[in-house]
Length: 578
Ligand code: GAP
Image 1 (cartoon, rainbow, N blue to C red):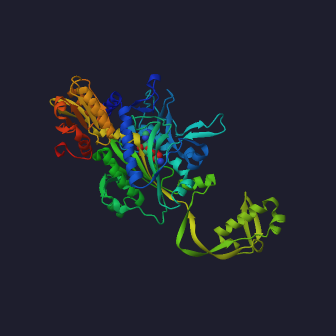
Image 2 (cartoon, rainbow, N blue to C red):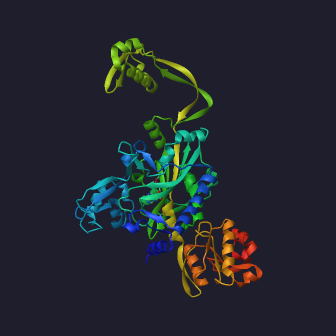
């Protein structure tokens, strides 16, 4: 069995995650987190929140998952959020065309960056066959398929809506209100952890490509001219970078830089993106990603999302493949400009100058007693067009006449009738559309990576054991309490102790089935870092055995001191330091 098969079996058997709706035959691309998985995911999200909301001082919101069509017309998702699909003419099965190429051609890792015609050509050249029926896919068209899940809001079809494909849009559309909460001051960040939906062509690799998943996203709004990140906080953090240049070079590979060096040498173009690459290292380490199986990869130019100006992915190695777990994008003012344009609302902020500035402004004051009789119903639009032209190109008013276009028609006006003048004005500032820096984490892929990276086997007392060496504050259960026997009051005392520990804030499991060795194995397998056994000595002297998962060492601790001791252990102490 491969490590992925091992993990899939463990995930199902022990309740980390499993395919949903199996009673009805299952639905590809949907997974349910069982009790262990839901707890692990929650702990991972709390760690994310701790770093990207609390430590960074950002806001968090929770927006609806269904949004009206207009939002996605503006964001570009209805037009540009497509994957390449190929449909087998023999059996009718549909496949993601770029993935077929990646699977079949050794040196192509990112076929997504190619045009559909190029992918069709590669499929033909490499004789790629339909994975479902084996028929040749040569001469089959590769087309774009939009990933949005549509629905109707309310009865009837007059109000189409979509399930959001990224949590980000729920933040962008609320910008006019959010800027008020930020007292109209840049920079500020808004985070959200929530569900996103994509109608993936071929969901695959367990939690890696699903149709409903959780994202943890941060949208950091900045003034690109005046706001710099606190780079000094991460300047010495080491980051493993696989730059676009290295990917294009024959002998290129991952190189480790400090964030400071990477910015200085121009390997990472945006200081803001560099800042978050540095900050995220702390997160990946805290949740238990194996940093020997981790890298940051820069997007190649054809690969960037429709909104992204510069982009890096965090990738983890899973079963021999590199998988994107986080996208770090410099989205510029794309989203806010689009929502401003489409909604007519104000998605700008006022940038105050250090000193008021005196500027020349060209204005017009058209003579409507001339424009009215001359242009009839179009006179008002002609006046607006003159105003706009004066702002854009004052030299157009240099001659005797000026011409403007309205609805495809040209209108020529004598300059003396336009009331054109240039005046000096004092301005305190200007309206700008903020830029956005976005780290976007896929929570499911991170849960999956952590499980694969922390899953191992070793030998204890001559027996093989499977374990998850999860960090103590990420593990679904922090401490398991066992009675040595279910008699002589040991079980009552153990249940009481479990209750006391829960009251002290610990995640506690109670288990009195099977022999003690078996119970240890069960907890090791789900990553519980500590087990406590109540035995006959407990009844005599009030001490219990505390056993550590990783070393399997044991020590005795007084029950009264147990909560404090466990806190020390979770904080990084070893048993011998208690
Ligand atoms: N707002 C930016 C955005 O959505 P993305 O790279 O498309 O960017 C961000 O998605 C993260 O969401 C990815 O790095 C990945 O971890 C996760 N993700 C995307 N599509 C997914 C899918 N179909 N199944 C599971 N996770 C997915």
